Amino acid sequence: MVKQLREFLRLESAGGILLVVAMILAMIVVNTGLWPWYKGLLAIPIEIRIGEFEIAKPLLLWINDGQMAIFFFLIGLEVKREVLEGELSDPAQVMLPAVAAVGGVVVPALVFTWFNYGDDSAMKAWAIPTATDIAFALGVLSLLGNRVPASLKLFLLTLAIIDDLVAILIIAVFYSVDISTLSLIIAGLAYAALVIQNRRGVMRLTSYLVFGLIMWAAVLKSGVHATIAGVLLAFTIPLKHPEGKQFSPLRNLEHDLHPTVVFIILPLFAFANTGIPLEGMNMEALMQPEPFGIAMGLFLGKQLGVFTFTWAAVKTGIAKLPLNVGWLEIYGLSVLTGIGFTMSLFISSLAFEEGATNLNADRLGILAGSFASALLGYVVLYFALKNKAPINDIEDEENNV
Image (cartoon, rainbow, N blue to C red; front, side, top):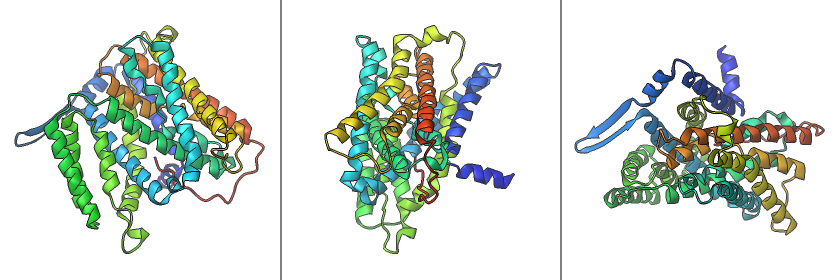
């Protein structure tokens, strides 16, 4: 049994499977007699106090503000490594997924705006369909087995990294409120201390994490969303170590955090944020402009944006298609980017307060658009790849979320 569990956790699809299980479990709990327990659990107050300083939030916000900061910390580590010595260090390799990522943000936002322009309340949700859940998308891609070209997977990974960077910028610019100057000054001083440590060649992770925790608390109090602190901390973690790659603080931290994020943090976030009461949730509710705009932004906007921007980049000579990848595979992958799921749910939690009347309908739109994208993307890629010979000697690429 233990051996089977370990083999499951090694699967690239395992993270996506756990997300689905967490979502189904949340839906069952919310729509049965366990709903009061679920609501009460997420409302449990948790308080940390040091002298006059305190952070008091319900469990739900500790998950959304605290654990998701760890997720974005991991994203930041991945981005820094890729920029310094990975795929993002080669401009030629980055150009096509970068252009595709721009299309995957702009067009979904325009599709949503088409359905909701003029409604100021609904327009707070414009960024929800711009996100991609890379763990879920890679999980679907892995179900296709060893016929998936390594270059196609790399294209999706690079696109997702850039998509995450855009999401971070959107959160910082559009979802920060009631800015506290004093808290920002404290956060800035903590960040300066982190940068100084990096410049002086400090390799001990403990000192980085202490100042990172101070910065996170200050950013949380400042009105800027706390996930930004996770990214800033990641950018100061040293990549290179005088004694070699095996001692790299960044690489070791990324390696250690990855299973925690994929198998605990993201499923827990999904469980806490996908509990949607089905009472009153029908096709009529989904067809309301806001949830319908989200669903269409993810399902239609993402595939149109990613595919057309990719096509334009190739046809104009700006970039070339990945090796051994044709247009049908690109289209199937474009559809998969419409799996917004946890990232879209996270942005929706920033756009609206818990309990807002339109929050559950928006979540329904996210789930509808994400699962439609997953199903169509899988079908398209299945037929695109079914006649290709299995690729047996592909380098086992690490699936970093």
